[in-house]
Length: 333
Ligand SMILES: [Zn+2]
Ligand SMILES: [Zn+2]
Image (cartoon, rainbow, N blue to C red; front, side, top):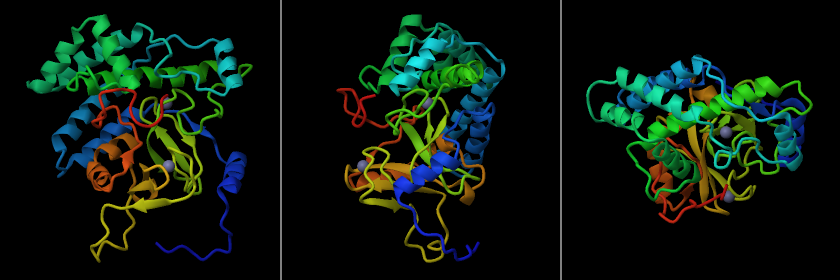
């Protein structure tokens, strides 16, 4: 594909931000098909992949999440006063660590686990799902609390992706139902917040960033918990917000035949703070999905981490080893 020469001048990050504010949608809420699309992509990526079994397991999990989301279970929502207070203070409305988890999250997790188990062949994964479905309320909430706070100490690693799936389901419902209930109200939920690096809905770190199709190459950060995508200036560190020392790393570079092809997933690295976040280009690979493509590009993480860079992206389905003394490196949200 050739791009015609243009005379358009390069815009500064500030100019891009102003232009973006005028022309771009700041926020895209999770679509009803968020989990279904993830499952399709995971199955596609699993073919011939070194992590095939894990990707297929997560695809089963995403399909179970999709069935649960379709069932349309109502969750308790923030009041108009809470929406207004968050907007006034410039903070996320439904912060994952502190927003009270209604008991429905556990009921939904147990139903999800039983549904998942019914679709799995006999084996350790099925046994773990069934065992977790019988766990006490206290155990599920303790594990969820550790997961959301990034506390690795005492976290059941085998059960963590399953707990994460239940939390994703709950926060996608929260985001979608809150938007439906409050849009058109006195204060719209999920506007811009003071910290542009965290999810305006749930305060999570992004799993990756995405150049959205149809948005003139504008970059959005993708939340790995609630599935929201929010606009963030390009070529700017998503950890320390520096615009200096940003470079892109590719997995494939040396092969002459592939040197011309543009990789769909790159690592955006910051030499100021030493963190990186994956940058994904759906225009180069149709069907790309942030959570799925993050899992399938673990080799890029290994390559970049060998150079001493620290991962900024948060994928609750595949936790990276972090020091036992929580909170994790990076943001204390
Ligand atoms: Zn979120
Ligand atoms: Zn940085």
